[in-house]
Amino acid sequence: MSAKVSLKGGAWRVVARHQIGALVATAVDFGTMIALVHAGLSPVAGTAIGATCGATANFTMGRHWIFPADTPARVHRQITRYAIVSAASLGLNTLGEFVMHDVLRMQYVVARLIVAVLVSLAWNYPLHRAWVFASRAHEA
Image (cartoon, rainbow, N blue to C red; front, side):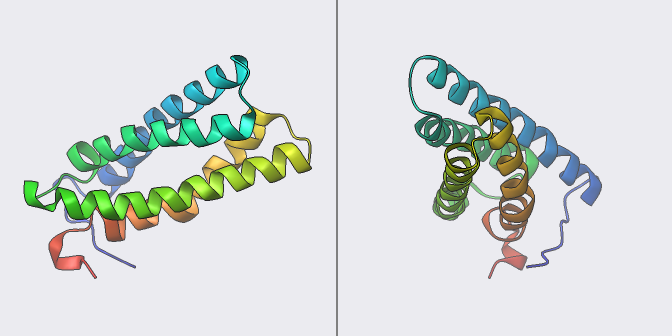
């Protein structure tokens, strides 16, 4: 999965935009999770709902700013691919929260932060770059 990033401004700008987008999406994700936990929901349920909200924000930024789409017609393919990657990410984040918080008794926000960074670097970014928002020339 080594798709070349051929956006104006070079690959380093794409990585920078991805990181900024990830921070914004994480703020939505964590803010939702923390608010829900404070309202009485479990950390695991809050993680699932927060991750869904963060994923929605991230897709919008990914399509329009991080990896700009070349045609409007590709949105359906991108939504489908993003949903697959995001569903697996949701599962990984929720499982990680369960293991670190419920099993290992780690504080829930610290656990979520550790898991979120690992999932983002090892799963989300590589698949967004190479598959979800890949240019037509590099799609599998």
